[in-house]
Every structure is written in C-alpha cells, then in structure tokens.
Image 1 (cartoon, rainbow, N blue to C red):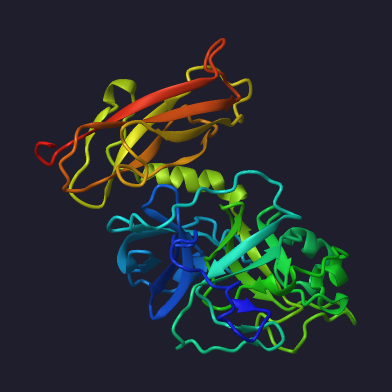
Image 2 (image 1 turned 180 degrees about the vertical axis):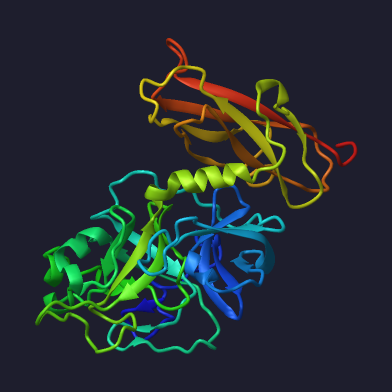
Length: 401
C-alpha cells in the first residue's frame, strides 16, 4: 500500500488486529501473492482474477487476527467467466477455503447501491510500500504488511475512456470499474481533475493508492465491500501529464481502478449459493435445531421464498435481514450477520447462512433469531412489516451444571 509519508509506521496507515480489517487476507499462489476479503458467509474470499493467470497451483489464504496468524488452503477458485485481461474487465475471482475461517476474522457484506462515485473509501492490502513522491520502493521480498489508506472514487473508468479515447489503451465495460487518483494536495498532480475535469485534491495525509501485491484488495464504503483492486496506470493527454515521475509505480498523479462490486453482485451471490452444501429447497427441509460441534463453525440455513408474481420478469426482489440474540449470544454461540438478500430474475428462493460456533463447553440449549424486513418488489402480507425465524443450538457437550 503506497502512502503519502515516508514512515509507514504512522498509525493512520496501520491495521491492528481487532480494528475491523481482520478479514482482509493475503492470497498466495505460484510464488506470488495478492490480497482478498472474506465474504459474509465466512467461507469464500473475493479477490482479483489476474492473480490466477497461467497458474495451476492451489492457492492459500493467510489471516492475521487477534487470534494470531493462520494459513488455510483453498479448495477451489472460480474466475469470472467473462474475465478479459486485455481490457481489464471482469477481473474477479472467488476462492473457497478448505476449512473454517478464524472466528475472529471479520466477514464483509458487499455494497449494493450504485452511488459510489463521489464517495470516500478506505483501501486495504498487503502490497508494496513507498511514498507518493517516490512511488512503491519496497521489494517483492519484503515481509508483507497489511496497511490502509483513504481515497475517493472520482469516476467510472468508461467515462475516463470517453474523454481520452485512444489515449487510454484499454476499453472498460460501462459501469464496471471505479477509478481514483493519487493526489498530493495540489492541482498539478490531480490526475482526474486535469484529464476529465473531476477536480479533487485528495484526503491529505490519509490519501493512498494500491501497489503491486494489493491486487484483489478491498475498497470499503461504510464497512461494506465496494471495490476490488485491479490495476494502476499513468495517463497523459497532449501536454497534460500529472504523474510526478516517468514510471508507473503508484506515485502521485497516477490512477487506480477497482472492479465495481455492485455491478457483480448477482455473480457473487449466485456463485456463493451454488456452493453451499445440503441447503433446504422447501420449508419442510429446514433444520430448526442444530448441534454446535466442538470447534470451528458450521452453517445453519434460513430459507426465504417469494410466492408472488413479479410485475416484470427482470425485477429483483430484495429484503433486509439481521440476526438477533435470544439466549444464544453473537460472537460466542453464532456469528452475527446482517445485510440485503436479492432474489434475481428467475429466482424465487435463496438461503441465508449463519455460522454456528463450536465448542466443548456444556451449556443449555440456546436460541437466536433472524429478522427479515423492508421487502422491495413484494410484501409479507397486509400489515406485516417483519418476519422472524428462530434457531435452537443443541448442547452436545454433556450436562450443563
């Protein structure tokens, strides 16, 4: 992660265990590494497709959390079927873990709105370090450090292409890539201000840009995963050359692009759903009493069904959900989740997985709840604003005293 000061130990750039970035992971394969983020189901990591170019070796995923450092192998990787490395399009991959992600690792829901442009975000990753004035200066052999910085999504990459034309060698798909530049606080290095008149001189000392090793890393808006780091570039047009030096090295005046997660939410959601095991497909298959196990986490599934008729076959039905404590406590008995569930065209049902935490402590059977509310495109019935389901976690560790 390139930052704007020479001292990467500055606390503004550090990510300490427990401060919300413990789900930002290092993805290693073929002697190289990138960055990724563990998704809301606790099993899949979202990262960049280009990390897997020409590689057949299995990936591994390293977590740094309050519980220490842990590396898990990947059971499989799925590259977006339309990935196009020439145009930097659809540069996304999902990696599934062979085991349970650490309980202390953050799980991230995805950003689903289309209002990212103009918003500030936090980027995080394990990439090479350096400064805006000198670019990335650490070597590939340096011990990777997870750092963070801030920036602002200035434009869509296709808008940048429409301004620069042949001055930009690739053609991004409309609405699929979010772009930010690396500002030093002056108009001279405001790349997008000078190139497309999207003027903004940055976040001051908090500003940063991705570098080699940050590929696949997250851009967060309000804690939600809004972008996946894809590439950097040094752009000029005629006499306009905002880059501080002559190299593409993540220095002041360069730009970076993130794959726009909101554009790919259907592919992400449906890919995850296709890889859940033993999911219920009808109400009578829902298991409402689950054993906790002795370690790690296991799933319990909540099934949501739409029984109405869409006014438009292409309509997306959505609803929000959140878990709620009963006698079972989030963090010790289960892992809390909240977010929005979409039923895409052709879908009339989907599951919400919740992780049950295993232990060897004898305790009474415990319950927790899932509340579903704010339906869009459908209703729960006249006068009904919320649906609630309950799960009972069965003690399997002997008698509680």
